[in-house]
Length: 385
Ligand code: PLP
Image (cartoon, rainbow, N blue to C red; front, side, top):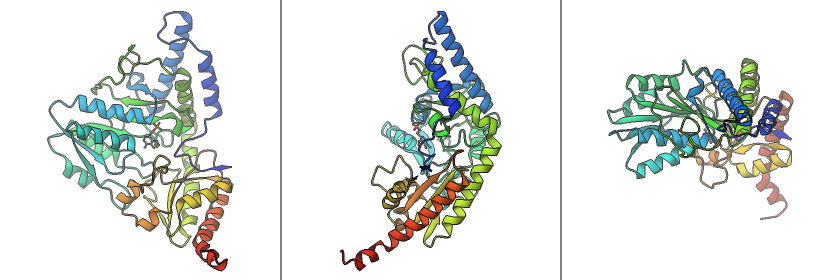
């Protein structure tokens, strides 16, 4: 199998699996005061410390959650509860549903949400952002890198403006953490969401980074874990796995980044040569492992199926939206023509992807795109209508 759907989820690393089994052996409840509990609490502390050091932030700025969706929901919920008398939120039109659907709910509660458009590369224009600002804006949430087209947003510039204007700024960095080196000391964000299964960690675990001094409203009430902000007995094995995954990335970040970029650029160059193809998003300002390519006149679902049978796993647009029949809101926001959107596949590599695999995948895609385009003619020849 050639797995090119790492934007949906990634395979856990060996070190991650080891850390998870170690965590399972540390079965004590970290809140218990006896030795077994203290051992688990020590391991939890160590995992938090490792994660914080990978991102250059403080341990107490990390709040463990069940993943990206919860972290996004929490950030929005907390910002709204801390809003005082302001009502306006700014976001982009290409956010993940974990942001967009939560904001739709907030609109029902009376908040006003401004959805910024993006340019043809999928990037929010700073001029649009500045124009949307008003005295009523209390919260901005804009993703670091898009899950479908991989493009980076000008997070630092937006964050700096927010900081000057004392507006709370959150970024959904689910696709970026563990793929690009991040230094939270230098990055002007107040809150950031991450999810372990996107960077070779376990599923169902992630974190919300909340900078010291940023107001945070408790999300899940109960026994008072996570400094009373997010109750529930901690998922120690998964948290230890997440810490191991981030440490593994940190060890090798420049090499991994370089390799992924080379594979991405090779595939982009080759796929662009296919007549009627379109690469969406920015060529350079994009995740090192993301390619979103559309083929005019081809049904992405058929292409995905044929590739699957050939042992190649890709996704249509984003995995989250591929189960729905609606066309991708991201590609629509980019004004990609409808007949291209229908033929959109997302190829996302990982540290395990080799150049040989990339070459094989490109060859198969070329072959099946041609086959699908000629399919009506084949039926004609066979007199099948
Ligand atoms: N945000 C983005 C940008 C994502 O890509 C995803 C998952 O695809 C999520 C949030 C949700 O993360 P999780 O699967 O951990 O809930």
